[in-house]
Length: 126
Image (cartoon, rainbow, N blue to C red; front, side, top):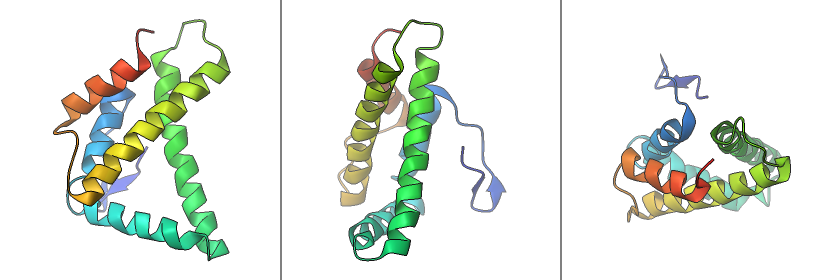
């Protein structure tokens, strides 16, 4: 999912736990500073088409990550693609709020276990 972290191959992140671990990284340095910079760039992107394209691509990649996690959560269950998309948007919206709390310096979650449990509650039983 992430090819490299700090020039080293990244560990494998998978499932809701992997998603939670990736999100928690965004609340620790140096990633919190990068998250803050990303938010600043998002604000400026509306005035710069090239920057907007880059930020849109980043957003799509993050959405695809969330959608893949949700799709795997419901693998083997009869769930319409639209329902998976809706749940992916819900999880992504929640995660975005968690990242905003990190950027603001007032984290709403303390660790990956807590965040993983919250994501699983959002998704419900498969």
